[in-house]
Length: 595
Image 1 (tube, rainbow, N blue to C red):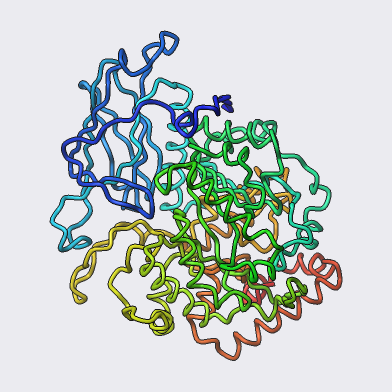
Image 2 (cartoon, helix red, strand yellow):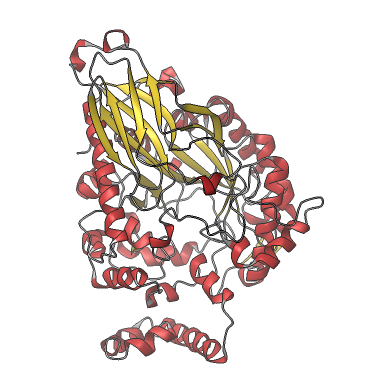
């Protein structure tokens, strides 16, 4: 159930953190970093300690309820690892999903600690040379008396476990709701004219009558269990969220009250002191679209506000206490012809600012790029700025080497899965070699070598098969199970979806729609659905296209698809509607053509 906490923002970052911190004790290994986030591995068993209720700052109105909340990282993908929390004789078993997830368990008011036990350890072959027993990773353990928050976090966790089990079973029709919700917070932007690569006019045309639909607390109430069960919220609006004013304040309170993580994209130009204050201490991952290392290149992409943004970022990072504080600040670089020469300068800028992570993100591929601007004395033609796939792989290799050199955590989204080095080893290694003094392919990368958060010690000998953590049971793409993007331009199964499944208001129907069920069924069988093949901006699809030799028939099919799309657009979608009745009897042929 939606609940809003109005917090005292005058107290600084600490006012957003609920409860009192718990201390790491016996059984925990030393502090390590996942990017800029500190965590500790447990062994088979580990101990947390905390103050009893009588001296933990509780009030009489909080009653006897008390809860231990912590973020847990399980390395297993298949729900096979469990965590048991024991406090004063009471035991709570918790099923774990892969990756970082919040967990909340009740503890007795008089308890002064809790023992954590894991059901299985990370196989030794995956950390050979590291003699420690490795169970799960733990960060931000705390104890609080907020029963509503405990209920919200527990509900999200139950839904996430159900969702993963349904995916592992290959179910097409789901009882779970999406753990990740894509949102459309605001539809107006402060950069005018728009960024040179932004298809602003086309995006607004797709929004149609929904272009002015407001996003408020009422929206969250209407979403009901879809909002309540979600753990991560992703802002995908074609607009600037910090133009929302007080509405954003209320939404941030609602997100925080449920312990949710928010991914928020901004151009950073209006990160005023007031807007910075809204973010401090919150579980927000702030993505700043910068794409340049100098004033001159930024002016070719947007305007003359580059120095202002750097000033905003320095104030924000200082106010949150550096990389260890909240929100997390991620600086985004999309490699294009116009900025490719500034890749090293951008990595160096990330290091200088002390951002939490650099994000390498592809410029969306499109068959008919019509964007053509003159900005900052430079003619930006979208078609000329798109880099060929092999060159993108080399850029990925260069970025990995540079991130290691400058010790900058790197999230490489060019490959959408972090496996470009394995799929295209020659091109990736060539990119690394372009960075003077870097090794062609260091084992497991370096401090900034990826965003998976997995341990990177030496592995088993090449002739010895590595044990599985259950990742082989996952489909080629998990998005149709885990995510739903409810946008003004239509509901989509992922951020790369080519066509909407339904209008914005029909998101529940979309989640159980025949198209999305068929998409899940195909992915569960290990193949991409025709919907995916139409979404050629998706890195998974692009990897598949470029990894396999393109036969003559494949080239002909892609050419036919391009001609059909052009014809359908010229006909304002009428040809597609006329063709629709034939899609079921001729589905195989249409699927191969991507129609």
